[in-house]
Length: 347
Ligand SMILES: NC(=O)c1ccc[n+]([C@@H]2O[C@H](COP(=O)([O-])OP(=O)(O)OC[C@H]3O[C@@H](n4cnc5c(N)ncnc54)[C@H](O)[C@@H]3O)[C@@H](O)[C@H]2O)c1
Image (cartoon, rainbow, N blue to C red; front, side):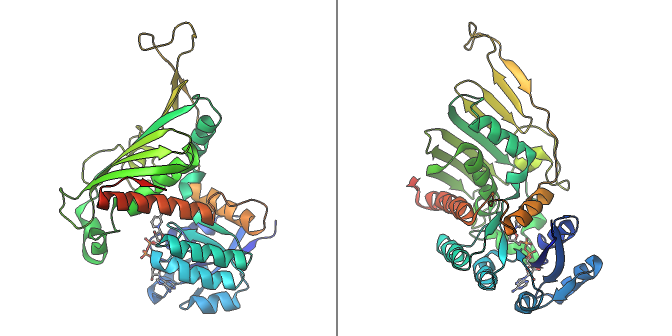
């Protein structure tokens, strides 16, 4: 396969590791990157690629086929639209945009210019999520009854200080920054969410943003879900505390999700299915059988960027399309609104 010429816009906390990973992806050739902050030029020197302070100059001269957008959320739509108008396929970091209406404008621009969007929900490329989806959608648990998620951990003091103090304000908290990933996982594994209700609290830190939320979900297939979310408690029961996705965060390989079906349940990410193996001995007075699945843990980012290259050449449909990114954002924003209004929201 011919190497796909790519450029990257935004060499910050996310864009810098993305650039390093992209250099390892054999299907692509990352040739240039852009950041308004000239200090980020050092990253491009390290990688031997061209640096542009102005992304418009980069997309005008580098003969690219696609771009990776890792700029702040409010720039996803305007920069994405400008790139789409140049005929560039888009990898857009999550969330697809700041609002559903901006997401709509971006999707429309991509359609008009015949370019494809892949939204950066990398957990869809986790082998754990792929396996959970196969088990749930393949019927190994029977009909899905429900799912519970616990996402509880302690964000340390410096996470909120100095230049990062925007994280104390509305929109900077666990619902829009972290929960959006769990919502995307749930939509991918369990199906579409049609109703949400949330109780939120900021009573521990007393910042304007929430520190804790209790969320109820109804899926279109009739299953129900609950999520307990908190970033102010010493706990390892979270995606980060159990999967080891980010090696910099302490983790212990426990469980943070549980899927329940009429024929079995699944502990995640330990990937243990519990069921009754003898049809004559079913019910709470009998022991359950536990089946473990052997998992190979791979780097989801390498898989995600390889997939993006195949999306660019039209070989694969985006695993997280613009529409998917939009719907995940819509559900997450509805949870935030429900928390503010105290009302359930149907989508
Ligand atoms: N997928 C994930 O798990 C995950 C995790 C963290 C962040 N993100 C997303 O990644 C994106 C970037 O987040 P971050 O934490 O790296 O932010 P950041 O602030 O560290 O980096 C953003 C970079 O964009 C640059 N920039 C701003 N305007 C620009 C412009 N016009 N042209 C070129 N560069 C410009 C900034 O100078 C900065 O270096 C956000 O959308 C965020 O939501 C995703």
